[in-house]
Amino acid sequence: MKRKQIYLTETLDREIKYISLKQNKPQSEVIRDILEKNITKKKKKMSGGDFLLWMAKHAGKGPKDLSKNLDRYLYGDKSIKYGHLYRKKKSTR
Image (cartoon, rainbow, N blue to C red; front, side):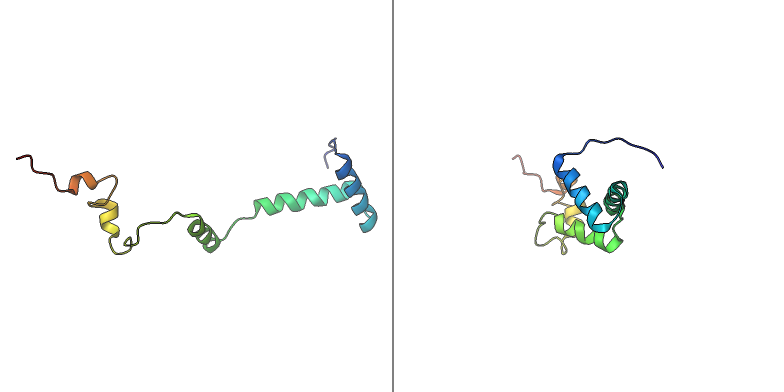
């Protein structure tokens, strides 16, 4: 194990002492447990389905006819990138 020195606020110190007495553990073990739980929680990977649901929840609203005109939005006259190639040019007569 590595030894680290940290500074705690009065509130954190009081909470750690309370948990230590309640669980009958040394304060260092309580701190290690809290750190380990927090770090592993942040490392937890999302499943593919959860990631897709998260993406769908955060996606913006698209046009109502997107599923019907997908190719037109990607490559055709409704496309931001390629629309200029397919839009009818105004006659200059």
